[in-house]
Image (cartoon, rainbow, N blue to C red; front, side, top):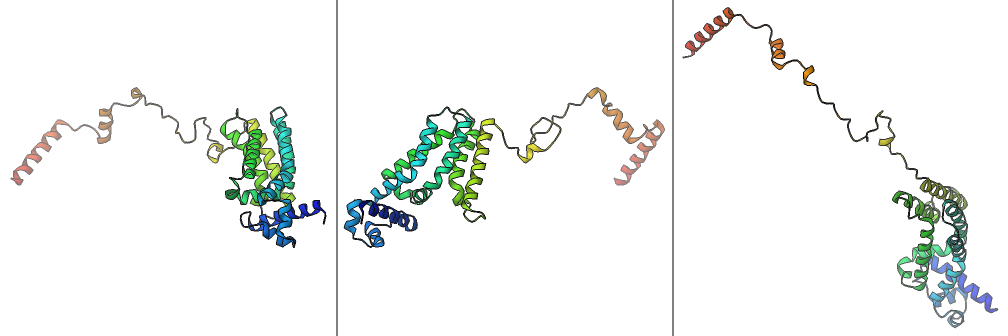
Length: 251
């Protein structure tokens, strides 16, 4: 069997096993058994399963690395970020099988050279899309555009539509986010979208103007109007006598 053919079959088998049962649960012996060859035959090409994963990383993520290298050589700006996102999304279709392994085995791979290489690649990609001069909301929109094209196939796994449809939808959302971040658009909340006819924030009441005291009638005049006309002196004396008689009866 040709040496190149055997090496390619080893990588294909390892990729499937890493994805189906996990990197840490796959051994060189298992790979050999699935290929119906001896472990020594696998060991001849790869001394460790990490060596297999490293070669898979370089092959599957080479298009992504090329996109990042291209974008790093361009003038920063919206058009560069948009074109980079289009190229990045196209490159992900080739890298998807390996990316699934890297994401699902993150805890196991983070201390390996492959884990460090993936973190470096992701950091460079984020730096391309995040504009440090934008406000926090704008920066978040930009990096979310990158996350959207990464996460769409898994996030929409149970949704109707083909994988290509989901990828196209993610790209549309990502490009919209980049445009929004660049233009400084802000989503309108329900509270602020109401037409109140006032420029004051919706949670504040308009200040109540102070009452002009000179326009209000004197308090004593108000009280007199509320109890009727002032009693005459004769009526006052009669009421006094009635009160005196009532006190005498009580005593």
